[in-house]
Length: 406
Image 1: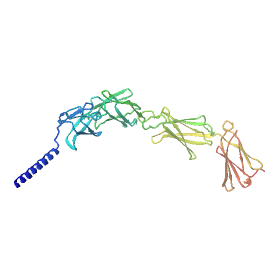
Image 2: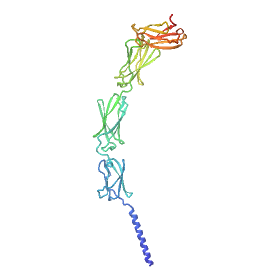
Image 3: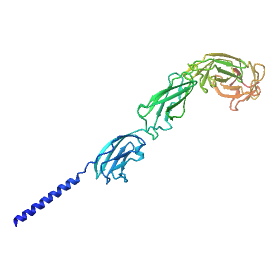
Image 4: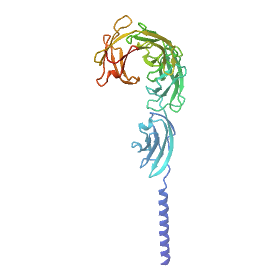
């Protein structure tokens, strides 16, 4: 009996060992080989990966520039195969795949998708700056991104055609694609005008771009003056006009260029007037002074160019005038004030009354303007005219009254 018992135990042990080995063998996945030999495709083509297994619970993971995608086996195939979706098949570049079954990697590899042979109809192009100076140095950059019909960048070294037209001159030059883009410089002109630019690649074209070539730093220029007469009447206008202002390459400066006219008189005063260029010329205007003066005038374009120096004199328009104080000592009448043809001075000529102490200290100052050659001042009641000196100034001529009329 003991012999049979030991034989039975031995058989059970063998059976247990046999089952353990079978279980371990079943847990080791069997590798699945890729049958598709092609590893390089063109964007837009159908891409199908076939394996030597049968469809069950496998998943194909695809990783490309868009991200990672999980694909189920083709349900219509008896043999294990996967067809890449259009969004993946149209994206050029490297793609890595992994075949997963029961959380195990059964196979993996890489494939390369080339850009489509059909290019996009439009070419994405940028240019800047859109304005440059005509100094034969300033340039603008053209950057273009040619793509295939699916928006993929074209291969390195692809040659594009850059065309630029300036006035009657037109030229084309090749530019190569490098790091997904192609770029070049345009410009470097001495003359002003518009440069028209476009890029092309077979049937793929960009829109037309324009770069404005503007005048550069203005050259020195000449000014002249024009006036109706030389009298200091404070009424007429003297005009200062520039010659045609060009840049250093002979281009007329842009319309709207600001010209400053600086005027200095013999009393140390300084005045300014301004003019903007139109067709290369600018004009500034200034009223005649009211007192005899000597002016020195020049003009400049800030920071770039200057003009010649003009000198002009203004003679006295008023040689004398009458002044009258009323008996109450409070009303001062000035005039008539006559100009260079014995006519009334223009309305609006400045008139000043200074009230001073006997020591010459100014107490009050009043200003008025002429009307029909006359002017009037009223001395405040708080001021005793017998204790002050009154002085009037018109057209640079000063007269004094002291005390009330007797």
